[in-house]
Length: 122
Image (cartoon, rainbow, N blue to C red; front, side, top):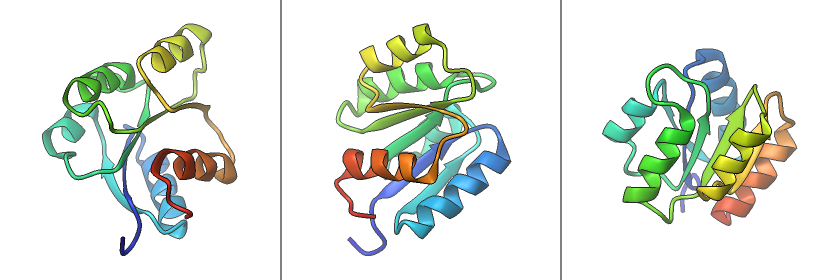
């Protein structure tokens, strides 16, 4: 696939979206950025993996994960958060998250998660 799989990054923090976009592009992924869960649900159909923050205004990342599971149960989901509470981790994993990462995380950590989730060598 030219340019690699398409990764959706959903985070209300523009700096996080930009930093992740640069990193993922450097790993040969195509990237679509969304400032909210609602924006992703409105226009995120053509993606191969979802990376979403937990804490966002409006619909949070766990609610987004549940919505995605109903419509696209096969879509790999990676949860990222600055607040890695055990209860949130348990909810995310129980709902099928492939990975649960605490911010800040190493570039190699997200790269490995994406390789596992998409099968792309990066």
